[in-house]
Image 1 (cartoon, rainbow, N blue to C red):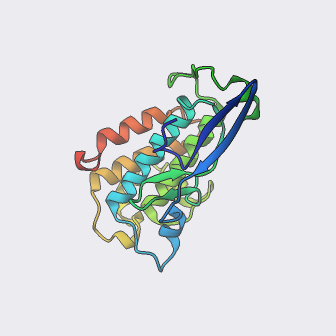
Image 2: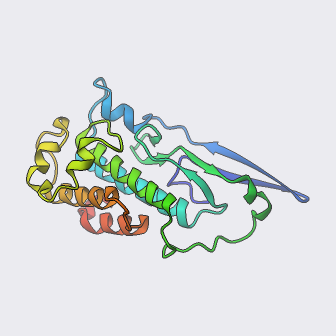
Image 3: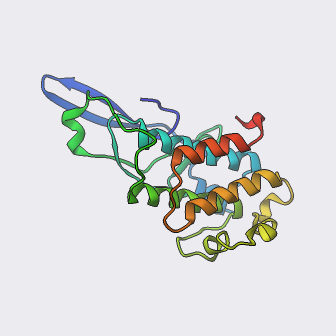
Length: 212
């Protein structure tokens, strides 16, 4: 299992017809994203790091939702469970696996990124959109927060610079800011039909090559 995308990873121990499963957690030297965004004693994250965190989380979600074996039955996204290692690489820490998968540990995962987006994935996409807004604004947000409603307004781009975290000052790329806001807008739109792979490819295509 690829170990760069999510904080916990799974190892398997097979013994006769019994499968034992255990989680191994990396040490996250820089704690949670929430601490960095909302603790005044922490050095503020710069724009490039925030953008990379968004890409890291999208990449983790793509792997966990479409390629992980065993399949994931629970993922939750918030700044409190996005963890940062020594190099500020973002990893997810709230991931659950179904016990019903224990008897199928060796079966290949046949899910495809083109599968129909169910309500669970819509909720996950929405949570990602809220996280992106939190990275931009530096504010702790909820599903009904006014910032979530603001990004759905037709003229949101006219006031987007006013919504940027004051800790960033003018040290951000306006084109990348607009790209992130478009992602947040699509993710938090009611009945969103955008998928995690689409989000990841969009972000990777819109950022400066130096960050990838």
